Image (cartoon, rainbow, N blue to C red; front, side, top):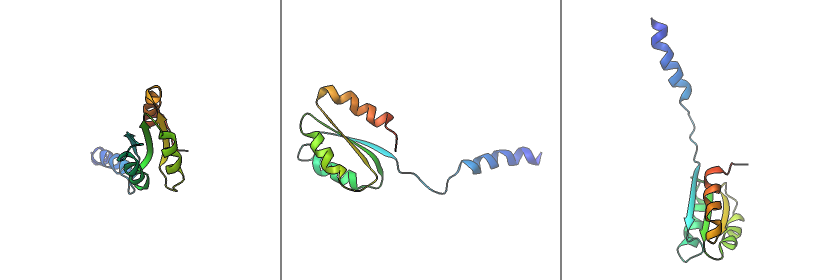
Length: 98
């Protein structure tokens, strides 16, 4: 009888973690604009962000290249134009940490 009561407690204790993971994947739409660039810079420096995907209709690969030179754990991808909008969502949902 005691083993039946202890078994759920043991499995619950195994699922608890003493460390937390901050793996937020963030997309910035309008990333090459006057608000999007500083916002992207702040997000790149945040320890909570692990993936930063940038999208705009122009100049986004340049913004992504500039941000990628900042040494943080966040990976940056840049997507430009309506034809790359699908690639933005693919990078958010399927890109794995190397």
